[in-house]
Length: 307
Image 1 (cartoon, rainbow, N blue to C red):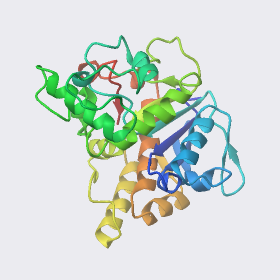
Image 2 (cartoon, rainbow, N blue to C red):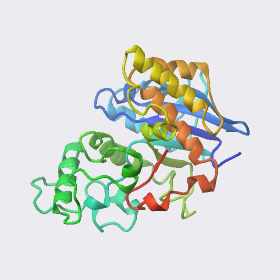
Image 3 (tube, rainbow, N blue to C red):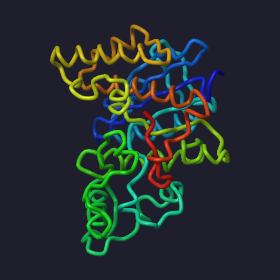
Image 4 (cartoon, one colour):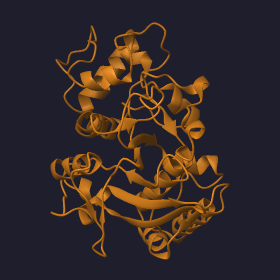
């Protein structure tokens, strides 16, 4: 194995109640001496037996896969298992900003164990508990208002501000944040190692799971981080240019024709985002040094984005 993982995955996360399986894409690549070979990309609905469509089917399927209990069955019939020498980049926020969490949690693991029922109270918030995306957003906004040191209502984590990501509990992020943490991260935490929150201690076993942000990766590479999602010819061309740019980066990346075609054809950009998340995961796991966070932009309670 040339790095920390011999197989990498990228997952673009969808949390829609009725169409999560169709909107969640997963990409897979193998790592060799000559770089990354991306060979597969499809929706969760097509990748797993039972054709999971709704959120209550899709997220358990992901949990079983990430826990090593369920294979991805590729179109050719090959079975891919998430094993100890694998790594995956998940495209949703793994945490919340200190501006709303305060000093309640010693570390990120304590936050995940407490989420959502054990979040600290908000004095003037009319809600009784955080039990969904909307209440998460309302609770977080009120916690920020009550924080004299915060100058925001929808606050960002340290790592969000660095890569231009949205606030985790804001209008855009609240759905994937809530369902991602509550229904995925909390369920797989005993089977995987979360980087860098656990990998830096060297005390956890299992495959690596890290937070990816495709727009940030595309921006770092000087590619189109916006304007590539849609059915117009301009947007299609931008998806093609982004795929070309991924293969022209500093590290060797080969994307098979079938994956390229899928990523260009998918007008929503979700397939491309899964590919980008896999590339970011590959680059982050090339060495222990690459996996180390930028300490100037990392709060170990909030989590960290790899781009």
